[in-house]
Image 1: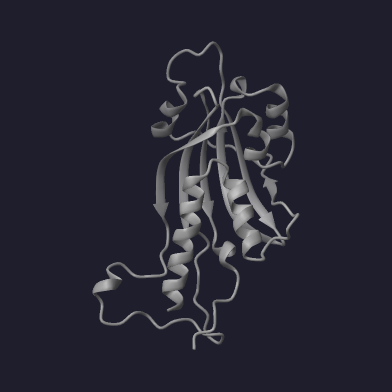
Image 2: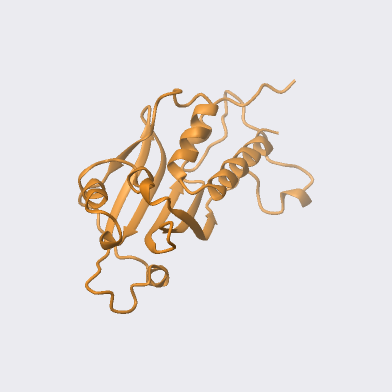
Length: 199
């Protein structure tokens, strides 16, 4: 039953993330609802200042940089969204600075402010490119098996992996101009509350 509960919660959270444009705000709302974040608290972004990674070639075309763009470049940013000594997600962003304001670019390169918060004035939209399930509390074809794995107990809690699922998305300005690719990988920490007691 605990495995079914967790599978339902993961699905609920993922559906919310897919339905909204700002992953940071959606994650914060989820954490507040489940008492993992205070009513007026916000997540902080822990930025890896020296991080560098080339944009995957199969995603690069989505940014429309495959043809000459008048000297437009591509920058990289890697952060972890954290709160109360827990990491809730890890995000990689490739963005085109010439499609942002100078203030936005400086904030992304010099501060730990979450990406979505920095670019919110663009009234951006989010287009899902790909989603990946990295782990499930239920085994494949569980519905055809006569017995499910034993549920967790306080003495023997369900072991969770470091990552649950991943979303890859394209961000566009309100005018429809693509300006960023984001790869977000979510951890189990958003479910770090005890399950209901079964009676």
